[in-house]
Image: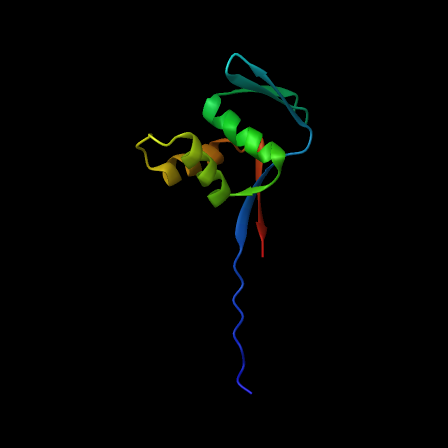
Length: 99
């Protein structure tokens, strides 16, 4: 019998760290990271990511779809912007891989 090749793909999943709390104040979100005792103020876009991840882990494509739905008329390189935002949000977002 011929051998079958099995391909494994990994999907990067983004989720919130444990012990992270947030409150909405005047169109901004204030986040407390109890792991280090620091507060962070998130703008509307970062707050949208936080809210999505609060619901559960999301792939890059899931987050991209949320952005497309909420920012229909924005003319930017969405993948680049989202990637940069996720990289800069390392304070409260972790990345894991699923096979």
